[in-house]
Amino acid sequence: MYLSEAEEIIAYVVCIAIVIGFAVSTYMEIKNTIAEEKEKQAEKKENEAKIKTLIQYLNSKKELIDSLAKAKKSLEENKNKK
Image (cartoon, rainbow, N blue to C red; front, side, top):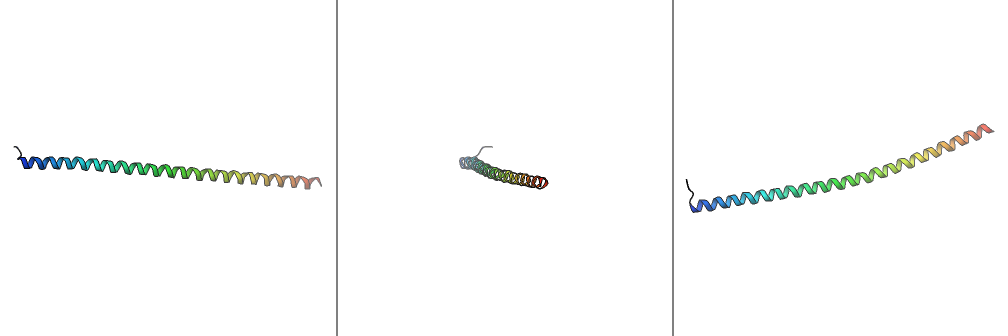
């Protein structure tokens, strides 16, 4: 069964539309995936910065506690000497 010339043109147009639609949808998916990955990387950098700040805070707090314990110990030693 053969197609007439008009049917053949319509078939070509439909095929081209399908290929163009596939290309556009693939492009949009790639674009969205790249945007999501960039967002994840930005979030990861932000979280790393927060963790570094938290570590610095905890280290400072530990130093303060250590110095407080050292001062308390020296006060007790001075009391015991008297």
